[in-house]
Length: 100
Image (cartoon, rainbow, N blue to C red; front, top):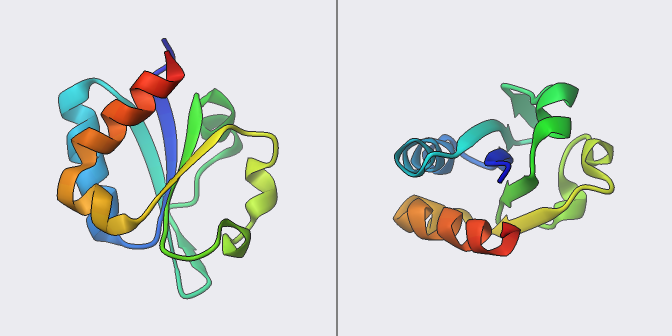
């Protein structure tokens, strides 16, 4: 099973929580943070293409993602940041069950 996930997070807290849970569960997560129309740590095309799924950790509409065209035709999962901050392992386990 491909355990590569790319994530677009609206804040560092959700990104760090996701990274820690991924390490513990054996996932490879690469992320970028999008806040106030700025992209920090922008994902590469290679990272996006190698990912099994795109995870949007945002509290706003997916359509408002900067450079959204990079994710067209990609399978994605959307979750509010507070769920990732509170229990990123549960979010990754749910995604894993959907990928199987």
